[in-house]
Image (cartoon, each protein chain N blue to C red):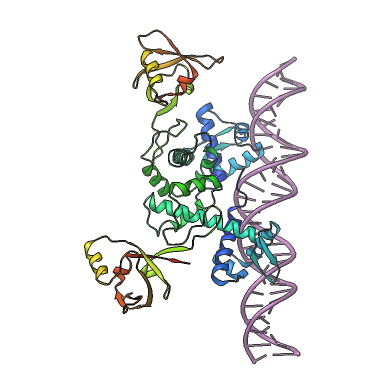
Length: 222
Length: 222
DNA sequence: AATAAAATTTAGACAAATCTAAAAAAATAT
DNA sequence: ATATTTTTTTAGATTTGTCTAAATTTTATT
């Protein structure tokens, strides 16, 4: 048996899911620009997705994924992120060069394959960009992992890893009372030099450079 | 950039390549039955492949791949077999359950990806069915690896591995003067019990059971 | 509330890959 | 050598996903 839904349909579901997550609501034009296509093409596809019972849609009134559509979207996202993880961790690609390949790999249909891949990779919780990987049942693990440069302002997080393991950076972090497990949040980001002001509970604010921020990884609940 | 050729075109090239290998010559009907489609569809595609300069084709006169078509076909075969190897060796699938998945994976376009996968797998020379894997330049390595049940009659080969590592089988093989590196050929296959008669140079013929044959792997030049 | 602007949908077209039914060419048999 | 059968090709239709241009609906503006 071939895939249940075409790559194109899967891409629409994924795009709608993402837009729904970010904006709460989705419009035809949003989807068109996200997918680099024309609004008319989006309308055409909305009708098909509705006919397939993946989408609630009333013309001119808006649309959103139903339970089944969300389920399918989550499976695509799962595949995309697991393949990215594979490409980075096993094939040693840079995290910035894997997206395109994962866009193709995410449409490989076998669920058994992706579950075995998950197992082979040790059931990772986040992909190389820190985005969470849904499990086999489509459940999110809520924890995201990012470096400090990418931690949203005012988001409580916990230090989970240090990139550069040199004695120098460890000394610096030690001095600023930053260690594995430290809870902190970013208070300000300075565009001028990408330096960052952090707040650790019961301490006065500290500033760290872009170079340091890039090497401190934190996790937080999404 | 997306794939250079559609999955469908790639499948036609692959099918034509295989039929060319086996029969020397290929007909429209052959391709149709290999691809589970209609002769009319094959003709349609032949015209497209000719227009794309992958095929030499004169209507009613027959057709065959040109250099470029052969090159593309070999790359697909390379991808198919490397993914099969990955599925069996890394994801622990059985060799009999990987074909369908590899049929999809072989159309992932990135050459860099497949070359990294090749490296990750340690540049295997044959896939789990013993078929040779073309290298990055599309060159065959001539050696095939199969178990004795699948070794063609009268084909010289060299013992390259033993599946079951029990003391019992090693004792039996030792008794029959079969060890790693032994050169032999199959003289007869008995359909009744799938037992096999072997000839080792300077020795009288020996017979082994199906059970033993299944556990003796040999390699030979194709 | 009427009008202008923006968003969305429809109508009709096109390309890719496939199909059926019929025609044409080649191979085979008498 | 002619007739029959088989193979191959054409003609025209279908499906999926896309497009442009025009029409419609909704939203924003005065």
